[in-house]
Image (cartoon, rainbow, N blue to C red; front, side, top):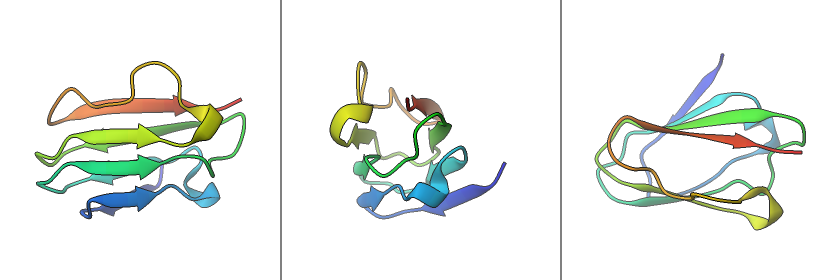
Length: 79
């Protein structure tokens, strides 16, 4: 799978990120908006830095929306 890495405090997942891996390496907390991810895909978001990730973005977000700590993975399933 293709991986896109970022280290900023905000990020927007694009339609081209659908079905891929997004990795956050930042030391500060970050927010990722996943509203643009395509339907019927599973996208993995990995926190490899110290900064906790919060997921936002319209109807695609349900349930837990924050990573638990470094090396945590969130899988965003869209339908």
